[in-house]
Length: 269
Length: 253
Image (cartoon, rainbow over all chains, first blue to last red; front, side):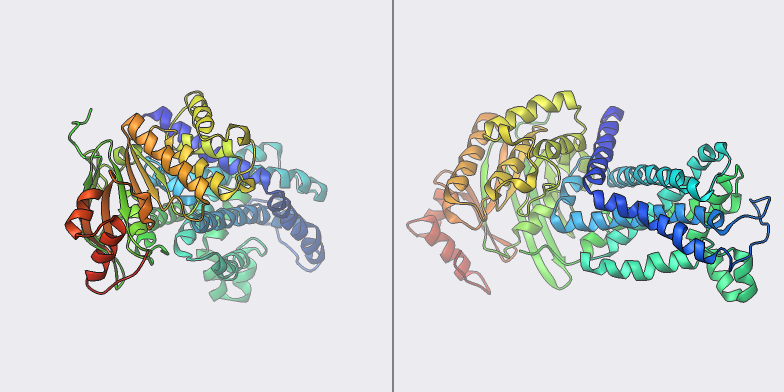
């Protein structure tokens, strides 16, 4: 296989993902409305309850909406990652996954392409969200929008890879509700998306530890710092580390020789 | 170029189990280039497992499979590039149009759109569905979807075509169309075909037949020979005799 062929296969996967995304208007709207509900309703209710001191990367007092915006950006990417995981399980049940799996390209390449296609879709959603968030005075410096792009790519890849791992474990579509309960909610709530870490530490050291090892916390912090032109090296390293781990697990899960796909029960005949 | 004597598909001593359930037990057979081979077996015989292994969806626990000399484990990419497959369960993306499904497949085989476009047009023309190319796959009937899947499997010009129960759920006319179409491809393009079915009448007098029953190969050879060695007047009789005398089971297709 030559490089040009890899490129064509990659573009084919991205193109299909884009077609599906455009075709599912409901998914698009809900992906956009979800963070706006948090921003417009949840944050408005809490802005007078929660006092925030000045913490990095902010250099002044900020309203709560501004604080949770990076968390909501990461939430868009988290949901997107889970959504593509869901579509992998759906594809497997419907059989269309086989079209991908019998392609004469290495599995890792196909998975990575699928992952990057999902990330591209999530980044478009993020920027649309941030444009609307301007109405709530979430206005990072103009350069921040550019500087956050690498952070969005890294965080998106990590959360998408987590989705891939889950899709290789989940046997049936019905089990997906479990993913909501045991992955999305705990990851989102036990992170710095809604509460700054110092505040959690004040109330419970144990909770603080859980928050600190949550990869989602680091995705949020990576995005938060990059929005204000700063680089959070610790978070970047943690996110990159989890990306490598999740990707390795996903490649293992989809490996025809060892993976869970092969170990699981046979085809219905 | 591969040696013309290299089998299109060589399955050697392949066994596979899912937990306790043994789906394939020491299966061996080969298909030559240009052969039309019917893999005959009842539901549960192990046909679908065999297809999953031959298309590299997962690897066999034991034994080896090679496609035109490329071992599926060592050189999966070369092997897969030569395979066209139609699975028992539809693999079309129902939300995409016929044409989008075709281009997606072409891209997954590394084909440029300019190369793929005329081939897609030609294959759609051949199956008589050129006018449906902008329809969503969901809007097509079962028989039409099958035809589309066959056309799609041919875009990258495979030299080994695998079909797993391609006629299930089709009416007599669609069934005959598909069968004739594939036999013609086999004759015209020298393509090797493995046609899995439980319908005995899909194997005609000069087909090669591999009888698979409960994961084991019971007979392998030209249809006429399988009939003769069973002492029965026709293939149905031969099949019944073979499967009934096999340990553990009998059944009618």
